Image 1 (tube, rainbow, N blue to C red):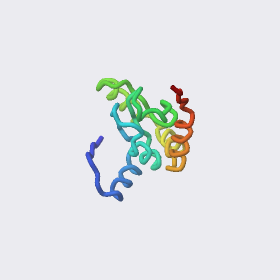
Image 2 (image 1 turned 120 degrees about the vertical axis):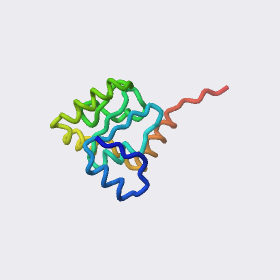
Image 3 (image 1 turned 90 degrees about the horizontal axis):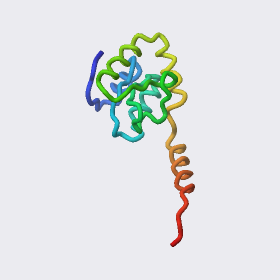
Image 4 (image 1 turned 90 degrees about the vertical axis):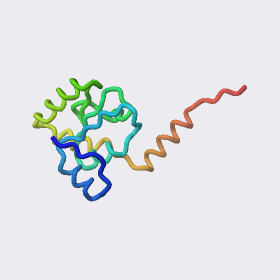
Length: 121
């Protein structure tokens, strides 16, 4: 296992995504992080904290992995995932289901805003 920290070189970043066995993103504060979508685009499955906003597009064991937000749960889940021979298939499903275009993001945001009922006073 290797934790690489911040990567500024885009070519190196994509090389790491494509060669990684897993993308570990335990943050509970980031909303819809681009890094999750980048990892998925490369076919790299991710491990996220259950209940985090970033975990919204992930179905555990289908297109990514989830664990409780504590060190013991994360460590145990990491071991399970890295031993799972189906991990590559999970990454492929992530590639099919998690990345979305900016056009689609705008359409979804527009639909959400239009569905809000404003009361007149």
